[in-house]
Length: 265
Image (tube, rainbow, N blue to C red; front, side):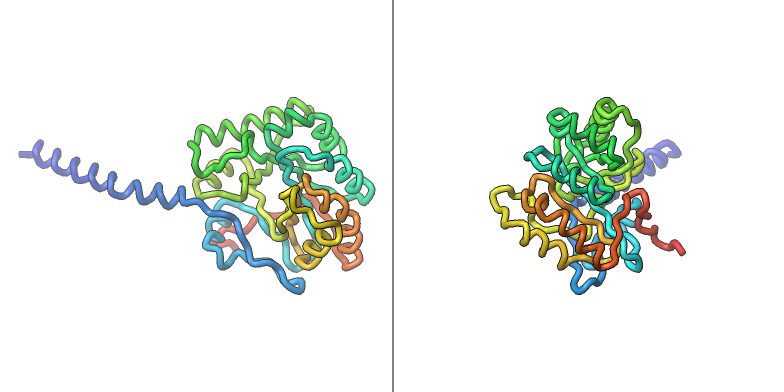
């Protein structure tokens, strides 16, 4: 009788686990595409309406700095080289602006000299994954492989150890990918200023790029620009000068604190 009762209780627990675990897993792996309410008239950009603010907060994600300080954080996504990153580095050096460059495996293999220059000139090199997959659709093991390969390859090329920042490919993430990457030591970096600049067949001129960035400018902004854009390259110096004229300064991601966890003072 006792054995039958124990077996029955065990069966109940197993069935309950099978019922509950998929729902939990589904919630943790639910994909989000990063989006935000754009800044207007210098007001902070917002993710309050996107449904993932609490998840980013829990796992130390970054998308915006201190909205009471006129500081800006310049970041570039470097999936491949289109002939402009050298010019971008020239402008950053001339203007004394720190930046973060998020690179893929293709970029590392294709442009080791530019990587060396980024590191030598004091810029942050961040992880954009090895093969640019949707990380919500791959295994935990594969996430580790994607990120570790970039980190190890950058260290080999630049001679500088350590990598602290990750930009999820295409801005797609889930609570699971945030948790796994955060446990690996990464801060997930999103953005609060962006526009459609990655399509090399739809470049609209330096003035267009300048206008798109400047109209979104706001305190604490994290700028996302794609280095493949001719428009960005040609407008970059003017953007930096105009922002400084408005009282902004440019800081490193190392100066940006993550979103505060829920319940923090």
